[in-house]
Length: 313
Image (tube, rainbow, N blue to C red; front, side, top):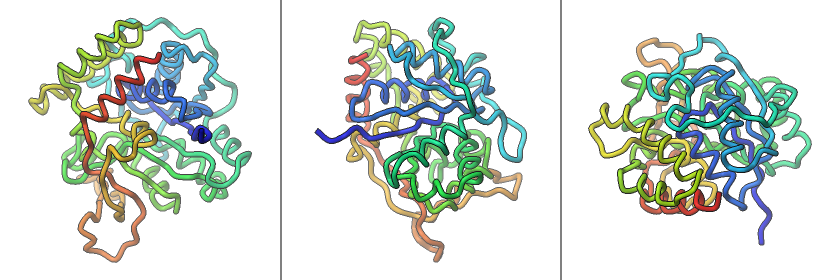
């Protein structure tokens, strides 16, 4: 059996982040070295608490959770309570976490862990704004060659944006951090709205998760039913897009996704298009490829994987 893939998940939970964390914690192919929280969907005081709530729901209270950046590099923090609810995890009534928040800052944990491992041993999995990752790269540039790859949820091109006409939320919240990451030279795999909007939490898919008849299954069904109401109303679909678990599913079954290597540049100058990911899908510039950008997903295979893994918790 191959050794489990070492990962650090950087996150701002968020219902879809919660499902991504549960998918990772349920999968023996992945060794979650730690979870780093960032301000995003809700402020940091809630995202770090929510990460611990999900670890306890998964029965993994020994997981290390660190608090990171309280705000973006340059801009003021924008949050999304209108989507995720006041707590960020509205839906089920999850108990206050008993497991401790780790001492030390998330950025120090990321740097120290990468420097303690060999090159190409650790994958970073950012599910929210890229502030912690950019801070780590800026503070200790030597980590860039040690990161196996960065698999992130963020951006959009053909789908446009979900928080402005051109910008996806994670990139919009901290476009300057996204710019640092995409110019770092680290291999990047990007799950934009173009792929996540094809992973819809239909009634049948939520029913299958509820039918697991477990505490985790019930909580996940409630999380998804709360989360999807915003996008169902917005897009007129049966179910909302399940963004962040695409990152973890790619690590487990990359064959579920198709895309191509492109140049991706982030707009940081224009307020009109702030945070837009300009993806050179058709290779009309000579800018070098810096990201593997996904565009399609086997959505049935994705939900089969997710449901099967949730059943293990």
